[in-house]
Image (cartoon, rainbow over all chains, first blue to last red):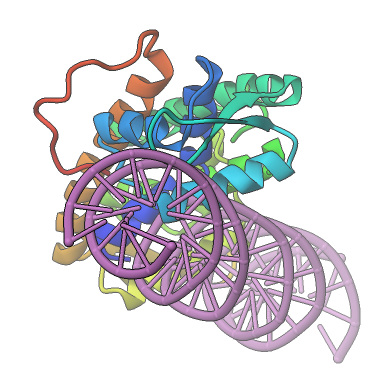
Length: 122
Length: 122
DNA sequence: AAAAGGTACTATGCAATGCAAGGTACTATG
DNA sequence: CATAGTACCTTGCATTGCATAGTACCTTTT
């Protein structure tokens, strides 16, 4: 895996988390989300985003409504469903656990020696 | 994607990063790595680790040597190659950028308003 | 009215990784 | 020789992000 591919692989699972978060703040359409992602330096394009939105809609995490645009074609504005909100909360915990796990490994300068308090992992 | 599947997806790309880090500290064999991962609450088993080690070896990031065990079959002890060390360093930057990106999105409470200093993203 | 440009969205096959399950081999012990 | 424990290997599958090609709506220009 070269570095560009590593970045692609690292985005798996995480892109969905980001999208759900962006939508959780209020009604947005695809272009808003792309701007938000670009601002955060997560470079994705429409061809990546739309299939993901479709998957999330089909999974029951999102809903949308068509809104006429003042200029150009109508837009799909997305919101989270109740299921989506619950899932996002759990997703947040998973992200925090993953971060903690990775950071524990990369900052560990000595081999671990305490094995107690082993819990369910990521 | 249910939560368990989300965890699987989130590990894509990141598991390799963790493994490279663990190996970077000194010669280790598979069981050491599994303990380290378990300690950090990243639950993987041999069936996941061995194919990954094979891929990393084939990519030139790792090398190994057989060492007789005091009890039981001989073990493969892994070390990073020079290529692997360079790649790990770049991977670390990628991880930091990804974390910063995700945390920017999940902690943003207002829509972004400053678009300057856009750089290459993850 | 038709053509062109811009914007929004859709569909689909591919690449790659983590996973699960089944397997082989070596060593020590009974 | 058989069994148990340990170490490692193989392979097909599930899933997501990606790239590419495409359709459709609206405004502007010809």
